[in-house]
Image (cartoon, rainbow, N blue to C red; front, top):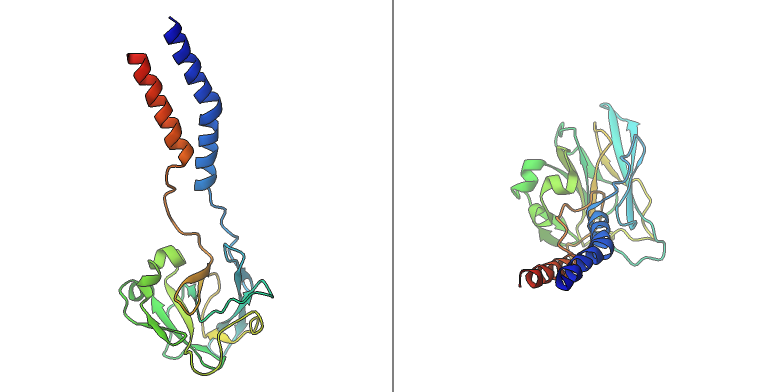
Length: 223
């Protein structure tokens, strides 16, 4: 009887102390609060609070055009952006409609399928990288259909830094706002993005410990 009483008391302790902590931990790790979507002339918010991209819609020769501005939020940051990509749902109308006025930078557009099949290498600060190496298109840009890519050649001009950002120097003609973005450094690493990575949270240490204790108690009860 004493053994049974001890086992019952042990289970109560687990349920009242360890399990609420486990549930809270799992809930927090699995919950992601998405930033609000941009509107016309709105901000695309980076999830890590490092970089935002602003889209401004204006009337161009063939309809509504969009200009983009990258903003490094920490003015004392040493971050250097050599490529950023902003998605859109409007197809490319003609060659040359994605471009940059910033010295040493150029623009191009890829479809989701072209991104995922590495149909074009990206120039990133003088280095070549393949699009899919950065991640699946839908993980990076959601349900959008195309992505406008702006990249520095690493030769003329300069990368985007906190001292040389906040200028509308990047454009797509006949486009629409409401997009997602990623921003890269010269090493090819994604330093900012607007969509949270999609991943399944691993079991926490608390979860493993709790399951071990429950198994130990059940074994004692059977003996």
